[in-house]
Amino acid sequence: MIDTDKVDINKAAVLAELQLHNGRDQGIHIRDLVAKITNSLLGGEAEERKVRKLIEELRREHHPICAHPDSGYYIAANAKELNETCAFLLARADTTVAQVAAMKNREAPDLYDALGVGRPKEKVEN
Image (cartoon, rainbow, N blue to C red):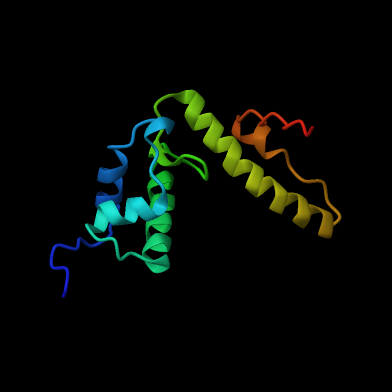
């Protein structure tokens, strides 16, 4: 049976659903986000990739969309949540930049300082 109520994935639909998830405690994981947007539980990796790409575009349009593997996607409820997401994203980028700098025998720029984001606190291993 064909699901005739299935909705196309687009920026407006992604943003509309995310606006229902304000703050980390209201985060939604990608599979659930796709299901809510499309009104279908049949979404797969292609749909998840499309939503992630649209979230990237929305961020570039200055929407404060946060994400973390533990909490899922959500709109920042405050500056602290936004800064934590920025630090999380920069940590991923910083690793790549450090590798490129080392391979090119150059010093890596301090992305945190350049973008005005505090460095995440190091986790202490027991």
